[in-house]
Amino acid sequence: MASPRLLLRSPTLRTIFTVHHRSVSSTTAPSHHNDHQRNQEYLSPNHYLNSWKPPKDPKEAQAKLDQLRRDYAKKVKAVRKEYIHEMELQRLEKQRKDEIKKEALRIESEERRAAKTAEKKAKAAERQVAEEEFRQTLLKERAEKLEYHKMREKKIMEKKKEKNELLRRQSSIWIDEIELEKKISNAILDSTPL
Image (cartoon, rainbow, N blue to C red; front, side, top):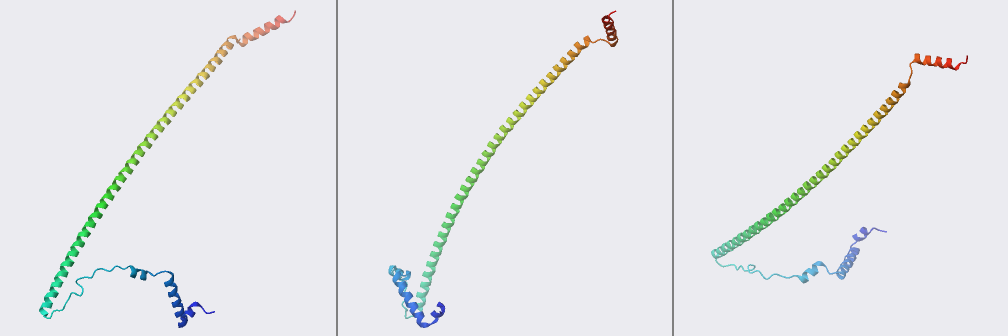
């Protein structure tokens, strides 16, 4: 089977395709061109068009042509003046809008800066409170440790005192070796029957 491109090269098939395509496109929906022609509103006739009647005298024709050129120059000048005026108004309006936008951005950035500053101050205050609490906790812990060490030292000292006191009491009953030997020998002698 031949490709569609090869088939469209034959003149009869091309005309059939074109006719069929036109009939389908015109029956299905009105084209933009047709719709535009039906709804076209024409301007009123311009009084300058076809207003030139060629005079018989060349000087008069030159004078009329000069007058037309002067009128055209005046109109162009007026249009240019109006255009310049409109451009100036647009520039001023744009400048005013830009200034309003700049002012709004400036105010917004100042508000952001103020909010950031307030947030930094609040965080600094929170940090200071936390540091103060931490310092107080450390001082309390140090005081408790110091108190604990003092109590421990006191207990140790009391135990030492008790031990020394016990030793002193026990040492008061101790006997010298010589005395001990005498007492032992006396006790042995006393216990032996004669």
